Length: 174
Image 1 (spheres, rainbow, N blue to C red):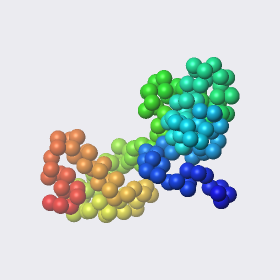
Image 2 (cartoon, helix red, strand yellow; image 1 turned 45 degrees about the vertical axis):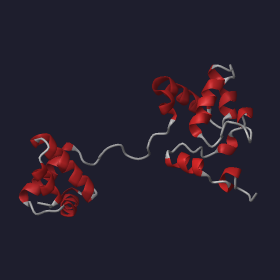
Image 3 (cartoon, rainbow, N blue to C red; image 1 turned 90 degrees about the vertical axis):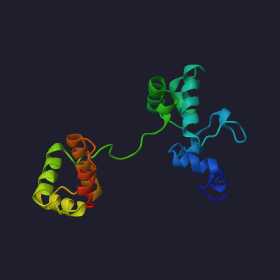
Image 4 (cartoon, one colour; image 1 turned 120 degrees about the horizontal axis):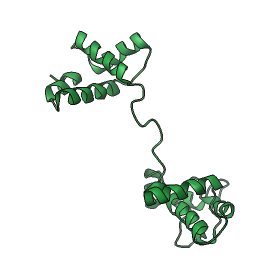
């Protein structure tokens, strides 16, 4: 087997693709040294949720010290404690890594959305790309045109109820 390549790399099956798509593919399966995860066993060291669950279980029920349990599963003690807390608070779903990146339109504050609304009121013919460009010119804040469009759509929906005309007007489809 070539250096740096694991058995999992050589047999990229449907499970590996599914784990990667769900963000639950263990990036370091070779670090899992627990005997239950030996090649050919039921357990799969590439399944991150399974590895974290078994790490917590080994620590809680198996009576293995935290440092030893974490090391056997390729994690730090802090990762074990975080997984234990997530499992207790959210069940197995808590062991799935969160989506990376911003969780909301952090640039689109209330003031910025108000400015977008003013720009649109001043020139109703502005398309989302024009709104984003005008916003950047006035404030230096760069937002994607679709983000500006969604922010205004949410605003119009909240103010006027779900009013198709307002949403179409923002998209320039009227």
